[in-house]
Image (cartoon, rainbow, N blue to C red; front, side):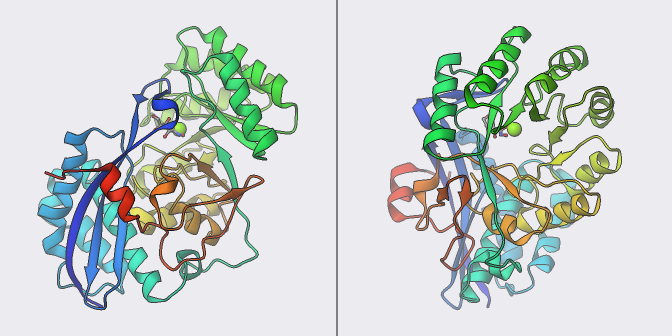
Length: 372
Ligand code: 0YR
Ligand code: MG
């Protein structure tokens, strides 16, 4: 099966209620720069990464695919994805300008499209291609009720709808208000509203310095919080180690890390408890499997971050023994031929062949932007 051509795309899809904030970002749309890869057998693969929908930076990603990766892909055989992955990741001129960032997110989109082709050609959903079985189970936790721009009352209403109506057993809420007491008051309000059974995850999106991280995070144990996510700046291995030694609540991170080596640094330094790889920021599914293997060996749960809104990572999560819980945000769900479904807090298993990335023509025309 030979790659014959490719075509890039950029979609900007509105978020719930037109606007959401965490401690660091405020966004109106989720961005999906990606690629369609065509083959001589007629199978077409779709892959995309996840951004904050800024057209100029999204175009850096699609330019990297069409101006740099395309010539390394066209004419190549698809079946050995690792070989193609290495061809792209270790291409000397590209390695020189970017072992992380734009080039890695572009590689993620390509890698996901290749896996999509591979499992379409095997006529099975990707979770089967990756070795998953019908007996596996993946819980969803929902992040879409916990934004920082919601008033405490809206936060409680949303969380109660997710848990009592939709049946989620785990939800995440954002922290990082300028007034730290307000963070704790909001956690207390949510705990009181949902009762003791629901798991509450918290996420500071890299906002704090050590004193405030210590101040807020050391009190989260009073509300039985499952984890504190990204309390400190994304690259700070020693800081996260020191913090996790000082507090009782486990530390989660990984959504901003670009490579296996980066993850190994945190894992082997014992600076993380819940490991959160994102296939759209690492080099796709290929590298996320490697990260998940290392975490699993180290007895750490893997709880992927949903830069793809879980649409693709559900497959990997079904197949990998280290993953039992996956983040879900519903924004882009309806863009796909086979949208993800969640029932009583657990993901339905996708049935279509492929990686779940095939977009509808309607989504392409409704949300598509000009790539250059
Ligand atoms: C909004 N999940 C996250 C969103 C989310 C971010 O900036 O991208 O909050 O991806 O941290 O864990
Ligand atoms: Mg996060």
